[in-house]
Image (cartoon, rainbow, N blue to C red; front, side, top):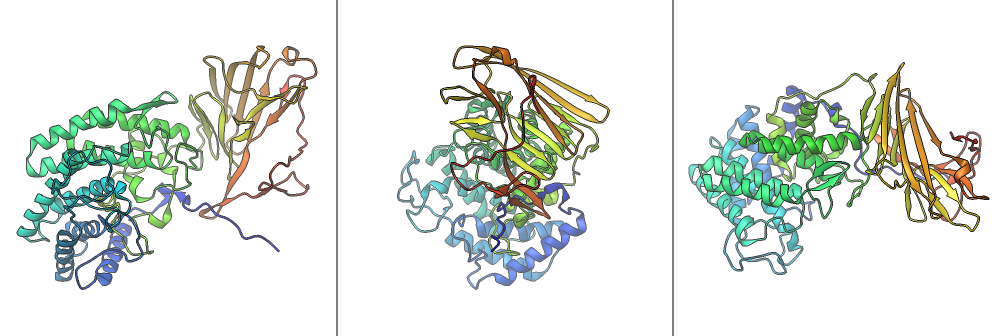
Length: 530
């Protein structure tokens, strides 16, 4: 009996291969608008009935998509206008909360009466999500105010502007700012404030938004691989939220013209370029969950990929939510609709580079369909070759890919952690790309070793070579090479998880069986290992 294939849930195909010509976007938006209007309930509600969370901003997000269709001239009829107005009336009457949510820990001002949006509608059910839901609702609101002048009534515009101002005050006065320490949400709030202040000619809102960006986002950045990154749930490297942050930074610059948003986006983009594999696979970070973004990261990846001249569009996105967020396939939920609006109004092109040119960064080597991504200690942790992704192995709480020292008493040490700075040399010659990393590594016996790892690729295959002085090792010690763990392989537009491995012609080895070892034919030579 053959086991069913297991696929990664949301890492599908490179986002720059998603059709984005005007005709395609027009067709996609027409289908979304038609589906939303068809499913609208008698009370005006445009929410997706299948959704269980992220509900508070949904209906307003769909209203913004209706306004986008009108603004682009894709659809202009009485049915759309009626749906948008009834949808907005529903939001103003049923989705604007002014009573504190029980269990909310981050309120600085109780019983303020200021409006906010809920993550889950029921009182006391996950109130911690109300802050980002209110940010999202404010972003939808400013898009409706900006694009919907000819769609909604003057009274509705005035009421929504008043609620939007209240949202901003709730985010910055009633609640602690950025209570989850999740920078993409904070940057989104800054974008909302900048846009709202510009729309209403309220310079104080713009000034407050810029102050919060510098004091609450910029000042709290952390350093990873030499790049300053915004903090996401306590750390900077997050494989899901950094593309979203790029979208917010791109929009912040478009709204404000402030150079700091470009500078910070460039830094995140260069970090992402070093991290992404050749096929766009991203791995690791404090909240790694195999959940990659879709529509919400598109604008930022395209905007900053063009700026730093890097092919960030290779990022494996979630095709289920490629153009807009949808809990039920084909029905826009309205969540992240602001990113859809911005992407559909943007006319930039994806940056693409010649495939035959090796790309070197200090923390990566990429050439053709092959790549090696390195940690801040210059240890390989992600390899892509042969349409297959290999991630770092773990041995005795040591992570990485590299030579292992086996002591006679049973102790093992992965020789990849440097004592001090490491040296890197890159080379391109005759269609090959190469990276040589030299480290000083100290063993448990206080012996310093010069350990070198060389990576050479022709764009299709990768050769790894480890070199160290065997004579400097303890008598009786053995050496082996800790290879990576085969993780996923491309299968059409999906990534299939690898569950068994084996040498050519050998028996399959089940990666899910604990405490078993796979014996391979690899051998060490006196100078090193290949």
